[in-house]
Length: 291
Ligand SMILES: NC(=O)c1ccc[n+]([C@@H]2O[C@H](COP(=O)([O-])OP(=O)(O)OC[C@H]3O[C@@H](n4cnc5c(N)ncnc54)[C@H](OP(=O)(O)O)[C@@H]3O)[C@@H](O)[C@H]2O)c1
Image: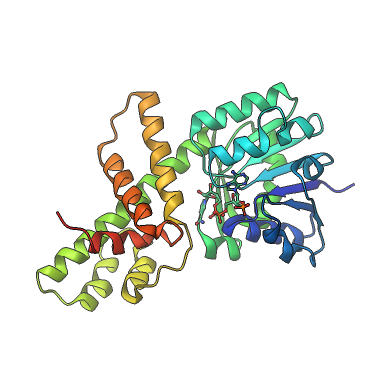
């Protein structure tokens, strides 16, 4: 009998990940809060559930890919959450980017409901999700990681078991605070360079290929060049990740100076209406800002 997988959250990432599970031959049920996102799945070889309880009740494995801890809480936790409707000993994999203490809380609530748990956020964006090139950062017990690995392999290219519960979320947080800040650093360099009279094209071609630039900057330089911020990773979710990093730093009594400043800059960009553009649109916000 094949494993029944339920995929919850069909946004930019989840829709692509769920599609790979289906085309990879898994027995899949999908669910999304807004029905519109389930429409492309009506014609695929999967079941479409209209409520979270219907979606999870027969699943051996439930994968969630939701915006933030609040979304995971409202769908999975609490009195009417999905956890309450899952089969005893089923496995819940949360691939949403959440803070480590929230992942630990999810694991604790899962345990109380007799459910096994992994936190397994991903590195990679829309193109990597599309091309099955995601990296999974996993926290949890080795037996669960072993059970989940064939499914991770249908959606991604690498599984890194970072440690116990919460360590996947912890590692992902490090990646995203570096990503957020590198984008600002590059943007500021370009803007100052322009003011100093250096040719913009020259900078956009050359700087991303220097050792001081993070490798992803090559792609974002292209967005800046075209002033086209088609969404890969929504700016509002980058703001969320910086906020969660600040919360985690507070919990652990670790000052986080620059990430805090970056959080405010992304907050302002969101206020300016850039939240659903790609996070590289921070450049547009910095460009229009005055001291
Ligand atoms: N995009 C990327 O490049 C990227 C890369 C790595 C990790 N991530 C992480 O992956 C997760 C999903 O990202 P995404 O880019 O796919 O986001 P997205 O396109 O904005 O999709 C968000 C999903 O969360 C659901 N959702 C939001 N609030 C909800 C609520 N209160 N209750 C129920 N469902 C709710 C949305 O449902 P509706 O359709 O009903 O709104 C949608 O299914 C996030 O944690 C993000 O940080 C994203």
